[in-house]
Length: 138
Image 1 (cartoon, rainbow, N blue to C red):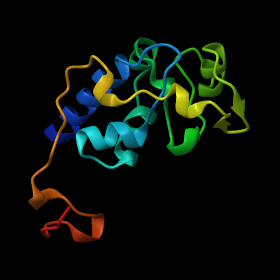
Image 2: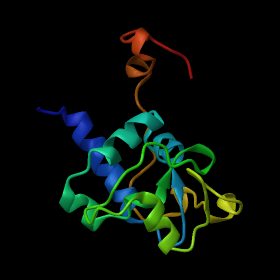
Image 3: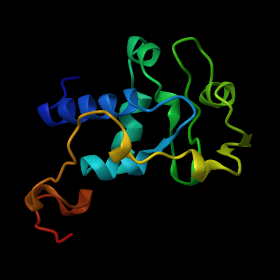
Image 4: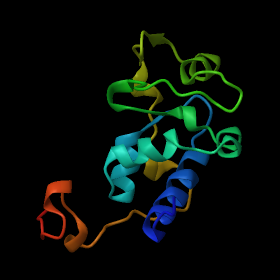
């Protein structure tokens, strides 16, 4: 399936940000989404649909949901689950979420050396799926 130029740009930006997350640190889908002015679900989708080579080259497992939730189980190119990758880096998990200390391990997207400027989409293209084409205030 062909993807739009906008999708390709957003994916490229997400991958650059993810590549900059250091070992032992975490970033949320929402933080990346806020930096790129997209919804967190778009970030999660991009990471869920990575090619095997991309999974091998990126620390995708360091991106988690709100409050440290792992969400739908994802596996790396080697077949290991996200939870296993995180445990190997010293993160404690409680079921399907990171245990206490999650907030101390978060790093702001702005603090990473990724080179992706903060994005702001024009007002005309913002909105929810049911409001496409309408001007929305933010």
